[in-house]
Amino acid sequence: MLFHFRLKPVEQIHGWGDEGVQSLHWFGLTDGESWIDTGTAELFRYTDEMVAHRVARGDTTRSPHNDYYVIRLWEDVLHLLPAVMEPVPAEVLRLLRPGLPAVSWSEAALERGEPGEPGPGEDEWYDLVDTATGWMDARRLDTGYLVSGPRIWLWRGGNDTVTLHWDNRGLRIGGIPAWAATAGTTTMPAERFLAEVRDFDRRLMDAMAERVEQVRRHWPHPAITLDVDQLAREHQARARSVTEALARAPDATDWPGVLAALERLSRIHPLPG
Image 1 (spheres, rainbow, N blue to C red):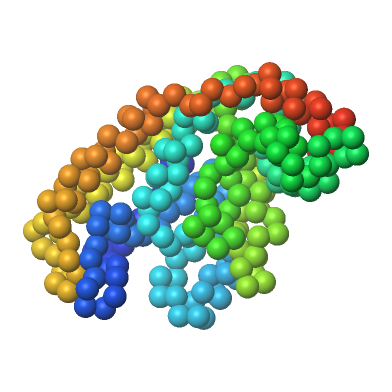
Image 2 (cartoon, rainbow, N blue to C red):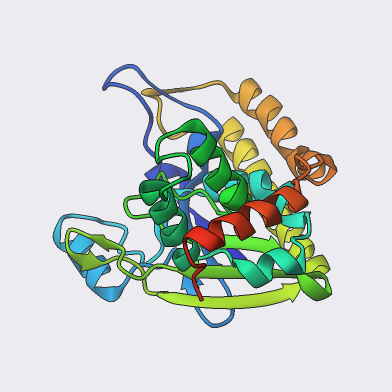
């Protein structure tokens, strides 16, 4: 199983807003922990040092995994899905593969420019670098809601496989290494990846359907306003999301343009090995 989660008991969930005027919605009821098990590493798992630091500062969960609303990982995976399913040409991957070296290279290219070329900060130069590397950004999982969030990329390449690559080297929180999984790569057939996404969706939607019925029968936080009918409506909408994501066509990437931009940039700044 690739995607894992554990919802907190309803009794441990907190409301949103100021004391006395708190409310909660479907999103907030997904409070829990989530992680990705690649088979060789657990992504979104903190280092032992980080867990000890959090416990020393009063964290009562003591969980080694990302403690946040589970729905956020689900949303970000579905948002990425159309781009992930668009194959990346082998010619592009031979020149540049998603990862930290490619990010560092693109950042350096934006900053430096070259004599005789549009200067850094100029629109034409920015557009050139963006054309060469923007496709990687579209395949990077959003973890910006976390402090020093893990760096994770997914893309579809040769032999109809999906590659999942992570590189968390150098990511620290308060001087402490943040993530147990430092750097690595795993691949799987594209159909298996889609099956994992559907399975994640099914398990989370089933768990949340049960949770909506649970709070309809008994809501243990009388001081927190909860609209149960709205919960049911939002759940129905959320349950359609995976089908909508699979049906949504990605913005077609101009791969010849990407290749041309990479080749032009490579003459100015050697591509990372």
